[in-house]
Image 1 (cartoon, rainbow, N blue to C red):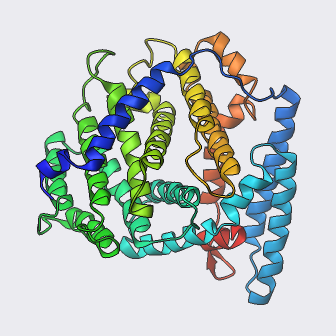
Image 2 (image 1 turned 30 degrees about the vertical axis):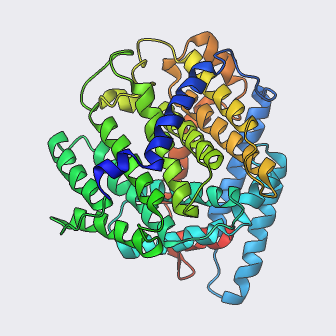
Length: 426
């Protein structure tokens, strides 16, 4: 594929069309306070925190008591599943239907497969990079379900998910010069276009190998949309890269357009890599889903992005204007976007849409708690009433889990912690 072919390709035209559609949807989304579910009282928050702590402590204790005897492990797992079901029935964080989608469709087993393959591919990969890659695996699993299939670990799912920490995090690394990033990116683009290149270093070797893996599942001549979609997300990342290292203000650069293009192209590529082909309505949905996830991520990273001079629609406003109405717009976009989706015929579409809605809303709640100082006092207090926990608990939640994880041994019962967790959830 040549550059000119890409610019006139079907996916390139989709990106242009969808970008305009979702910029309009963003501006049209209501900026009034959203119609949220019931409030959570102070005492309800305390009760939820206690129940969550009890479950976490039980789960950690269960991992530490993982039996050496193989014939005892199934009974051990059943005790955990019973405890989890009891916790979910008390909590409204996740319904039994959510649990069925996340745990009973094979996603834990797929996670286990991915962890093993990722370690084999690069035994020095960091836990944070691994976590980012796994999150994309899960998104692709949701895509598989929406398209009427079953979650599975394909070569393309593995390779594209691994490309995330290799490309996105590389481009975000402030210790690497912009010139070096552009040089690597230019060569990577040529690789995606089908140009034969010998890697210059170990980093390029890994990048090129992942692209080759995708080609073993999908012949570029038979599935050109897949490689066009990879070029689309790559080009969107480069456009975003060019805004790094300098502070810009609204209307100086089209940061909203860049964010929508990058987020939308990312999940659109997920979908093409899952299915090979998409109809126009399916493609439009996955683009819009990517927009939602992108702005949720930007909200979570608002302060860090500002500190690193990474411009997003959130970091542009940080410290200058309150994020009250922007956050309202994001939540309302989430609700309106999912409400108007009817292009899929999978059996559990309603439950999958509700899972996406609740997951997105929870990401936003935790982001608001984390970035409290970016909101007006009145708005924060109003939104706080809908948080599942107290603000302090939410801010410390992930650090608390991390501390518990770091205090544990690498294995119990002769099995690694990661494999134990996957076994418990599978």
